[in-house]
Image (cartoon, rainbow, N blue to C red; front, top):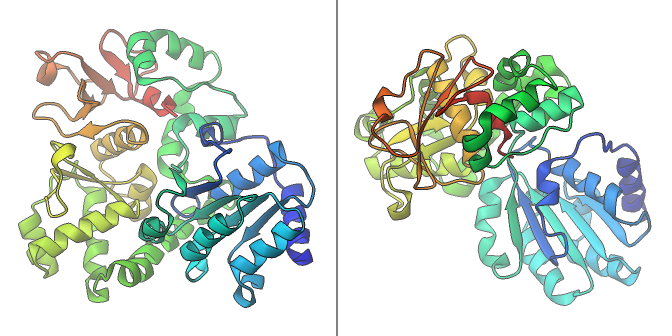
Length: 397
């Protein structure tokens, strides 16, 4: 265990506090068992190390362990917890739990047997975390970590402290908010870069390898996780990749499930299940007219990739910019809002607000007769009336 403490101390010493994610302030760190799930490379490890460095004592009562450490291949997690508790341990942080066999059952046992321990765990395999909910139900509070919002990207890269704004604040005071942001920087000097490479924090490491690493994440999900954890037939993976490419290059995609399932060579219900699995892994987002009545085999009304970086990773030269705009809007909203596909307009938010998305020439003709209707339009610094700059919705978290 001494080697684990040594590794813990080394990692804490090299952790910077220059920029921290907004999620840190939303987690109830007093809970005895906390889970943080999110896609690979989204920043979960950094969040844990920053919290430890910022708020917890630098002594043997705190231990961070990544479960892909070779030590964990020869030692049991419950034995680690036992030894740590006997040394006076209070805070145990377990990173990348999906790399440890039967992790959810052992964490449940730790929770039950060592009430003096507070345990925080993270997992990059979203399917594994979903599978584990049965073992950890009624015990763990699980938080979901998004990639960087446009606001967080600006704060990270430009060393700013730009504020979060609620949807209501943006709708009512977007002109004043634009002025505050523009007094700090020019959003359009950075917006296009964010759309292409700003969602996953590892863009800072080796920028020229960003898409290579992102493609590795995509392939890991498709070729390993989906077959192992959801029983997806490996022979269908090339067709699923083709579907992702079509989604990247199309105008916002209204899928013909029957034709697509025939093209891939599987029945309609199986194909619909595969779409749901892809959404669980945060590769795609599915939009429905009424999310309250969704069934597992219901076909989606619209299909997007999860974030704009995936569009450019899959199709750097043929990305449809109308698709990019709508994907950005949906991605920044779905973190904390209910999004549906309306009869008119592009998005219906929180069962109250209607949005149409477009460029500078976009009008509100399609939604002019609709109450609480707005146009989110690209290419402008300031809006007016119900016309709001698209980039501003990147300040929701």
